[in-house]
Amino acid sequence: MARILVTGGMGYIGSHTVVELLNSGYDVVIVDNLSNSRVEVLQGIGQITGKHPDFENVDCTDYNEMSNIFAKYSDIQAIIHFAASKAVGESVEKPVMYYRNNIDSLLTLLELMKVHKVENIVFSSSCTVYGQPDILPVDESAPIKPALSPYGNTKQINEEIIRDAAYADKNIHAVLLRYFNPIGAHPSALIGELPNGIPNNLLPYVTQTAAGLRQKLRIFGDDYNTPDGSCIRDYIYVVDLAKAHVIAVQRMLERKAETNVEVFNLGTGRGLSVLEIVETFKKVTGVDVPYEIVARREGDIEQVWADPRKANAVLGWKAQATVEETLLSAWRWQEHLAQQA
Ligand code: UFG
Image 1 (tube, rainbow, N blue to C red):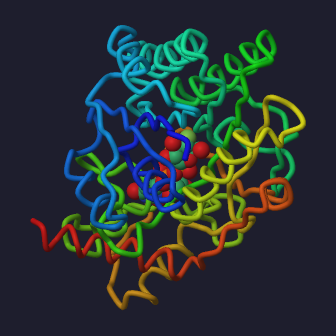
Image 2: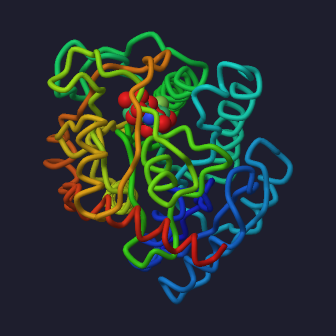
């Protein structure tokens, strides 16, 4: 079976994808500098799959180290490129660091792909490229809006870099996956999201508040033009998201695409408000989540949810989990972390 290089494979979405790749019979080498992940993730992956992927603690922007990896694993057939800095607020404070890390890593991969004749790359993009869409649900033909943060800009720039590289070299095959809001954890509760410090994202903040680690969830605004006034997102179960990567890789390896760059929205097609998420979490877990409504968060999009029909039709992929199952998995993971502590 083919070997897949997974950059950022120790991270949240990366680790779930590694599990699905291994379960589908792929060989995997993970490259991750552990800047926002822990080495223990490997144990979780091993316990779930009974397999032990190769792991290289290397920074993807380090050309020489990455060159050694391509030489060492000469059977790499495709890359799934997750490795990136991803905190919106931090990117506003440290834009140069974000541009260096997120763009250099992609450029390094593209250069080495050419040298080592690796032709396939899946790129982790984001619905952030749509900004506030004019039409909802948003499909892949919607215009790209000016980025609201350096982080968002790196996603847009990287999409363009890949398009240009694949235009110039038709041997390059790329799939750009635009994620909506990934949440939840593996049903085994052996891997999940490991936020660094105070979580930025809604779900880890909800589970940490439910666990008593945070006093109160702050809900950023209830005066938006939405039914209950809080923002709306398309929350997608991370395991469903991970499975889409396996399908995308397989499709590339089988050369099924009509063009050498394809783009897919990965979402459920359903928008849920912040308040709906909190209420549903409380209902399925039976655990309270104290919260207060505070001012809007700068840069937040009011509402966005996916039109995932292209991924449904072309990839034969569809989000399966209910939001109830997903929220429960997030809570099981939080409970698992509490036992470890
Ligand atoms: N929210 C709160 N309180 C919190 C955290 C979040 O009310 O403590 C709200 C936000 O205001 C937003 C919703 O919960 O309405 C979701 O917020 P997240 O931070 O979880 O997710 P975002 O939609 O803001 O951002 C996510 C990713 C980004 C990505 C963006 C668009 O974190 O990396 O989607 O793709 F850029």
